[in-house]
Figure: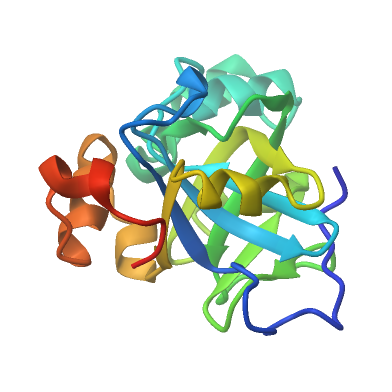
Length: 202
């Protein structure tokens, strides 16, 4: 999926760029149960986002070696921030492709601006920069993405599949991945026991 946005729709009311989708208890698709998805692009043509609260078994150093950025000996000597950089499961689509969400203090030509503070980059430039300690201040990496066709996401929200709320960089880049779902719900004052009876907006 091409990670571009129709500039005519950017910022228009009803589009969910820079929002979280939080799966409701009645989510029909088990792949998204208790998931949080950060929406990178949303228009009349569909939506693209990255699930941010599922960790892959594959490590960052493994990816660097597979891509030929480092050899195995160099990967062992990675500084702790890069060595411990978790790789997340971004969604069920194109799981061999990597995406990095990051703060806007790092940009390359291919970086897509999602919000005033968040960019999306899907090229090896940023992986190399992170491995050298020259990357953005905050970043998260996923393999794969989550995608919806025209009107599909809107339908799922209308059917009470998702709760939506504006994203913050603090919650997006928080390192406590296992608690992301609960932290985002708590940040908007939502009690999990009451979710099933709520509409899809916060």
